[in-house]
Length: 246
Image (cartoon, rainbow, N blue to C red; front, top):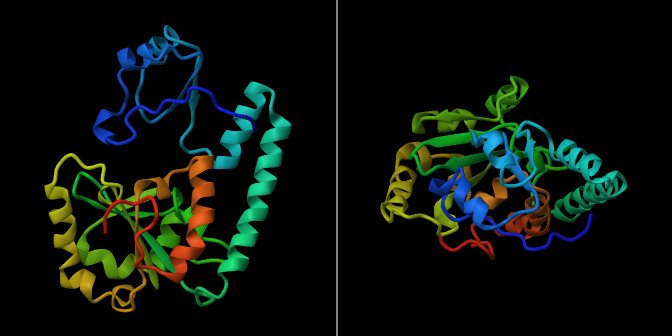
């Protein structure tokens, strides 16, 4: 769809920096501002800096790209990218077919900086994993998806109900972008509980640790997952190339 020039990310390494402060954005002298509707930023204030477009977090990747294509007169390019992406998804699962058993279930867990455990449902990495030629959600997660839940918070004792044959854990500690060093110890502590240790996926070595970018909904992140997932499925406990710690 073309190149992005002078791209600058604010708050990438620290979620405490979000939402970005208007004065920090103003320093960048942007020609255009794209902002998610979940940041609670004043649209009037942003428009004093540069024209601002608010993107709906509940839109699918396809819907967002088509919206941007319409705004920038790039409808053809947006459709071409989506067609290419869908073809790459089919190819990726064909490549991966010997790396898992047909009918396997998978669950995506998020250990957040607030020390809470979340199960992803209709948002993030599950949108890649749950596929006719890929994984299925567990029954509990499938029910959450049916109810339109993007994710839910659970307790350790609920893990057995929600997890599938494989587990993907997403946390900031995997990127190394954590200000509080005790975050690593807190994350390890719940993994030492019997609720975790006795899970079949844990006992069978089918747990993968990945960084937060794996759970993002952007086009670049989705493409990254397509390229990285085959190797991860064949080596579930590997340290992914761009993750800093295990």
